[in-house]
Image (cartoon, rainbow, N blue to C red; front, side, top):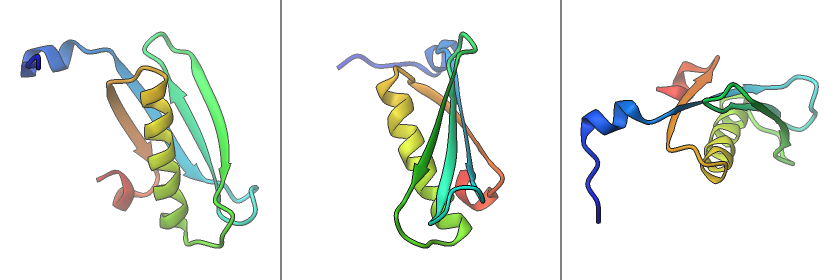
Amino acid sequence: MARISLEDTFKTEKWLLHVDRSSTIPDSGAGIVITSPQGEDLEFAVKSGFRAFNNDAEYEALVIGMKMAHEAGARHLIAYSDSQLIVK
């Protein structure tokens, strides 16, 4: 297994993930925007299918967004949300 140094980690291209609970999507929906290092945006709306509190919906969106970003090739992801509880 190859070892990655801390120096190599900072050279990795950074992807961005923005998640936010959406008041326009009923039943605990959330929006996800994944931005590639080249500046291309991938936008998604997700619906959990159950009533949830704001933090629950944003947590679900964060997990889904992380999985989607990984599938798109992200290895260094910076997440943003208006919920500090979720991103910290």
